[in-house]
Image 1 (tube, rainbow, N blue to C red):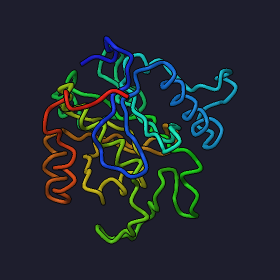
Image 2: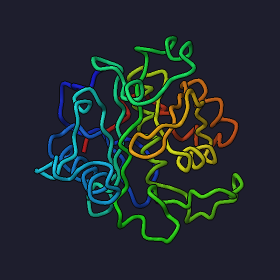
Image 3: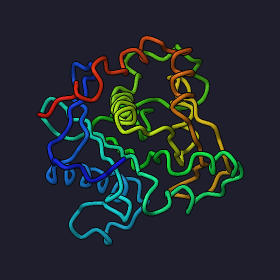
Image 4: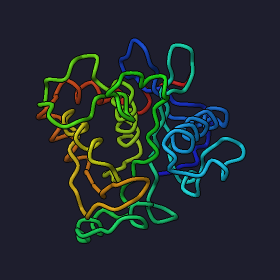
Length: 245
């Protein structure tokens, strides 16, 4: 696994969408677009981070050099969604520093074999409805699996997860850690992405708890809940089927 590719050309993933294009962001201009979106969401909108600490309007941290960055582009070629996978080297993953881990045996068995999902951000103008929340979907309780309106499907988040999954296959990433809030965990579970909680809730950019999911669990759970989606996420020709813009 490497967060320092030999080329700075973005990788476009073969994800079906009428409105968005999903990429691994390698070029410096594309990365700056994603960091600017993170600044808007994490500093200006949600106030998790102090805007004064980012005079250039780009939210970055010490983990970005060891991360794989992803973006969603709309029809105007604007990055309107982003997420990253922080690799488990050289710095310990953020979840270990910020959260209490109670299932230490599970963590120790996975160390060095995966990555942590973090810095999910969706542009505000794609979250216009009253109950959209921070992820472009009504994430409140009480919605039974499979009963969401089609307009409520979080297409941007779903596409970013597909891109991470395809990248993980190509890079031999075998698990994902994450520190997530309850509404996001509920939303992901309804879609078939089921994480295991491995510690108590703590205050880390809001109330979150640590979770983990192996790629084996990913395939098993999604294959049971939504096999068509899983089939669409598996490249038929390997990583070489991905294209450069």
